[in-house]
Image (cartoon, rainbow, N blue to C red; front, side, top):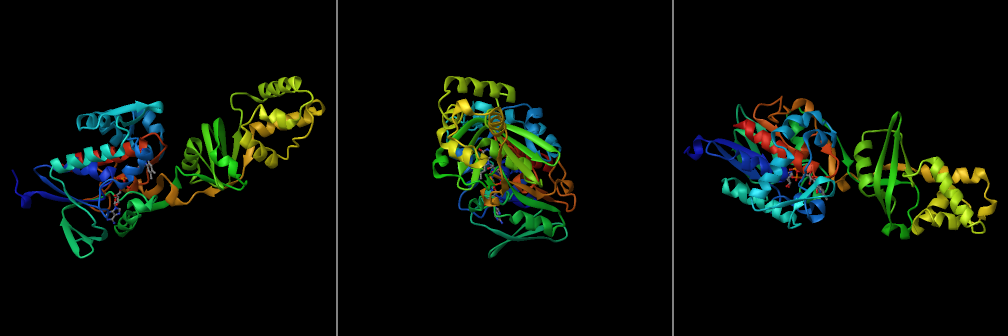
Length: 409
Ligand SMILES: Cc1cc2nc3c(=O)[nH]c(=O)nc-3n(C[C@H](O)[C@H](O)[C@H](O)COP(=O)(O)OP(=O)(O)OC[C@H]3O[C@@H](n4cnc5c(N)ncnc54)[C@H](O)[C@@H]3O)c2cc1C
């Protein structure tokens, strides 16, 4: 066995998903690994992930996985192939945290406790001899001829290889405050402007108090930005001044680098305009002496009706048997293309992930080593890679950690 002084000394800054997984895969007889984190515990962000249940991966094939990566999917191809969702499932099942697969192939711990995922990683790090140092906020890093000096308040660490796994800049209370970007810039790396992703979207229309508890099920959000067009089906919810819910979170990731964004809701995506018109005619036939308010109550959730009529200028008092064809066709249009005025994304701190970060151009996609500085590595959300919801972001963090560790040996 090598003595401590013969070993390659590796420091990893950040004990989140990527840092922990890197450390437990790297530490061995030839590699001494020190994991530094500013927090008093490991995996603070993992703890709140998946609403406290941690959606650790998505049980899908590599092609489907890559299709769910929004920024730089091709950069991730090698790492995802090296450590696939199936490998993640095997790892946790074998390390005291059995997993289960839910709707949309989302994988969670059977216990529904994110803490069990964190414990599995933490105890495996301990078993492998990783030296975890808490409450060590790295303030500066520099390189001498062939060693790195990592400075925390009142203490300097020296290492042969340095891994930056400091995460993005959202939910900064978990410790990811964007320090990794400054470290990257110091070594000449380009940092793509960090932006909100998987976050609510601000809209101009006033969201009423009663809409805050409403979930619009099975609607379609239509996105337009120049020539770009996309429709996303699913559920939508409301916050003061914002829309949210699964389809909105996905939309935010797709549009965060776009200009002139327009948003429309298709409130009846299962019916094309012709079928919707037939449906209206049927309702009108059945309620000749009733008014438009009644007609809308057959089509929309109660809490949404005033929002709809106020923003489309629909007169709810018109009696159905006097509704002209033109008025009926306008209703069809409004139901299929209900406009929401885009006012921007929610603050970056509210993003489930950060889009942007250290440019992939200057990082080797197999080893995650900097192409500008030998011995320096970047893994996890600090890199300009972000995915849709479903366990893809965690899996990317684990796959990067794994590839980096394996290729360091
Ligand atoms: C509310 C929420 C829910 C989520 N749910 C899911 C989910 O269910 N499934 C999914 O796939 N993804 C989810 N994500 C995203 C996922 O959590 C992240 O993509 C993932 O944790 C990134 O891992 P990471 O290791 O790159 O960074 P992090 O987990 O952010 O870890 C970075 C670590 O670096 C430390 N650090 C930073 N700067 C310094 C410094 N200067 N010195 C010392 N330490 C430092 C931080 O303290 C932190 O512990 C969620 C995110 C949020 C915010």
